[in-house]
Length: 586
Image (cartoon, rainbow, N blue to C red; front, top):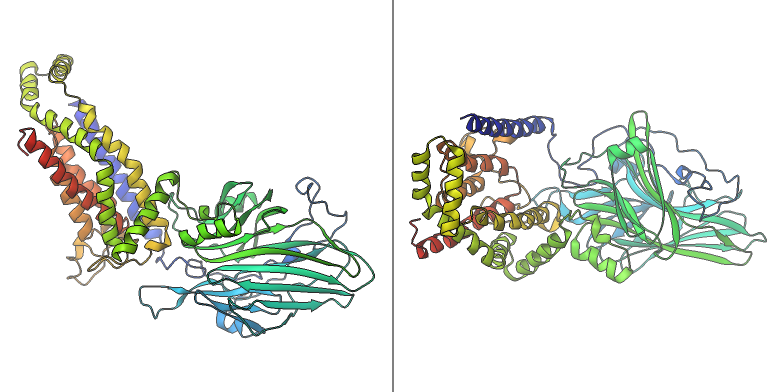
């Protein structure tokens, strides 16, 4: 009785903690806008975005492989300014338009910054006429987010800065026609930036310095992505949102609060990339993959406004009189589409760009499952149907293990009358009961653990599928049938307002929809096929578990709940057939 009481207490406390966490977390959580450059950010006064002067003078220790002449000065940061409306800010500076099938926006000719981007293929909600997802916004607007490529002079040489007005050879940047920006410093040095855009989200930035003067000059090329304001993130342990990069072949992930503590994190690398990621969107700097660079992740707060920056600085470039120096880097700014990122890794040699998607510990399972799901979807044209078919594929792969499990459980269910007789015979003598049961298992060649092992093996597959549904943009706003119009979001219905018949919206932790209830029902039915625990108290506890799992899985993506319900249904059919063949009454 003491053991039973402790077990019941432990389960009750566990459920109370989980439900309490869901309740208080839902109260703290703001309305969940679409994960985008602006949609996810907390509204706050904006400071100017850090520019090249934000790059500190390299010191001997961290930049030993990138020597810098002593005394190289770094200009001070731009002064703060009040935030203004995004559209109004865009009208204050001359701009070069960006038009493609995937991106819309503009480049500020003042400063030469890529600071205005919207994603043409993605909208804030399911309505195709809703606003496009905003990725980049200019300095001076709320939650500024932008990229810049330039030079830091090794000596007292004028270089283009945030107030420099560039001349453009074209009025519009389109994938078929790059644009060249130019600026002359009046001392014999001409700076050029040729910006090209592919059909998707990759910019190529070729920087060139032409020296028509009589003196040599040295420079350090840099690139940065800067973000003002701390964006609102999902704060879910299986998803990283923040700063990240692949440096020397190793993924480095830095949370916003971690960088607030560290302030500056530096690391040299040859190859790789650095950037800032949201759940579905990425802005990443990709330096020349064969050139050693110094990368940095930095944070500073001014007037209680957070400012984050990822940047890189390349080795010294010296341009002699009559000479030319040139370097080419890339900027990815767009949606984290798996096939697209893999294509850039293959075609541009960018190290592990696909790791911008948080595939997690089970990467070796998650990515194959993703590609299998994509392949099936290409055939049937519906991700929900693809999930159902993928479930059948997974069931076939685990068919031998599942058969072994169900046979073991059927044998245990067949022995239940004998087990009940032992309990009645030996009463409270638990030691004797256990001895007799072990003898019974040995005599009948039954193994209680055999029914559990196959389920344990399938847990990584379940978790990998969960990751696919949760983190990949391909699942975003993917419809199924009926009321499920987004497989990556929870079932929008709830039992507590009679599935929309009553005119009120319950709190998040009471959003228990139709599919979670179907899943719980299938779990209950499957449990009825399993051997009933000999202890009546334990039996009651196990009967309570489908309710617990229904509540726990209700806020999960609908696609995952559909998978679990369908998987349970297939398991019920398989187990029912096996039990009939073994002469056990289902």
